[in-house]
Image 1: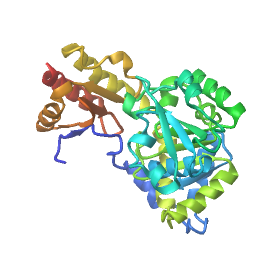
Image 2: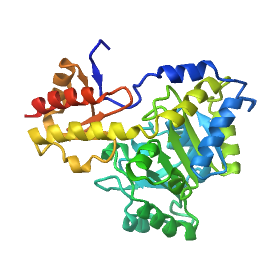
Image 3: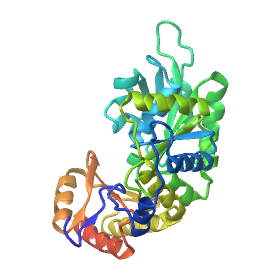
Image 4: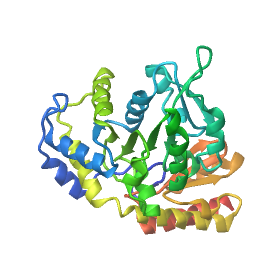
Length: 343
């Protein structure tokens, strides 16, 4: 990208800060396949504690963390329930069906939320020899394709109360759980303890170059470590990357509030130009969805010509994501350009 380009395609496009690079260069390392990397150990212990779980496993991606987390709860031929736009069924290339034999059924919610009535109708914990038995429910918080919406804690507690008595377990795709924490003040452990397995990402809002983690019981994580290697995803001196994650946890969590403010700045300007495109009241974190109908491709192309990179994530929907490398001035410039383009 040339100078002056503002990249709103994702919060994965950030580059390590000078402080993060310095931390990476100082990292003490070992062979993680042998479970001997001290910096990886430190990161795994830190994240497990933050999420209220016994153990955690460092993985190369959020998709892998989700795959391992769901596999720990759902056996081949069993089903996972989730919202229809959830990342695990929309954006992971059918990995759960391909590699672990998991089937899925979904409910739809305009904000990606937990529909307790729908879960109650769908769940079949012991479906017998002719139907598929429900083993787990997955929840995404924040919900990417619902515009970064935050799952209300009360809904998650109610979901746990609904499924736990019948033996159905819960997986949290918490790739952006840090955004939910900053937006609501809810401790990450308050979210994490409600779920049997939790996947979190370091390379989205927190700005690390690579890495996610899966948290859960010691037994679940021991099995996940085996499956990580089985899938060819063991790595060696991963402490260099783990150091970036530790730095991000120390320095980049609370600043997510800046990303949320920048997202609201853009949404407010676009809504002023055309209120039908976005409701700023729905922008809870760092994601803005612009519903522009058949103008989507044109908007993306025209924005690119003005130095603003965006992306299409659904029929007529353009997504913008604010992040660590975006300043308030950048947000104001993007807001001005996008407002002009939707008029």
